[in-house]
Image (tube, rainbow, N blue to C red; front, side, top):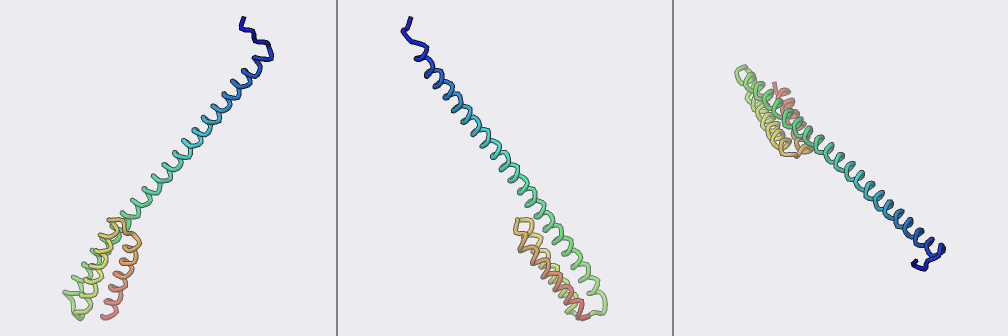
Length: 129
C-alpha cells in the first residue's frame, strides 16, 4: 500500500481533471484559429476572384472600345469629314488600348479613367463633324 488516504487522492484527481480542461481550452483555441484561418483564406480567394474579374473587364472593355474607335476612324477617313475627326477617333482608340493594357496588368482604376478619357476624346472628335 502506498499510504495515501482518500483525501490524498482527491487533489490529484482534481488536478488531472483541471489539466483536462486546460487541454480542451487549448484545443478550442486551436479550432477557433483554424476556423478564422479558413475564413481568411476564403475571403482572400474571393478578393482574388474579384480582382481577376476586374482585370478581365477592364482589358475587354478597353479592347472593344479600341476596335470601335479604329473602325470609326477608318469610316470617317474614307468619307468627307475633316481630318480632325478620324484623328480624334484614332487618338481615343489609342487611349483605350492603353487602358486595356493597364487593366490587364491590374491597374483597373487608372484603366477606368483612361477609358472615360478615350471615349470623351472620340465624342469630341465626333463634334468636329
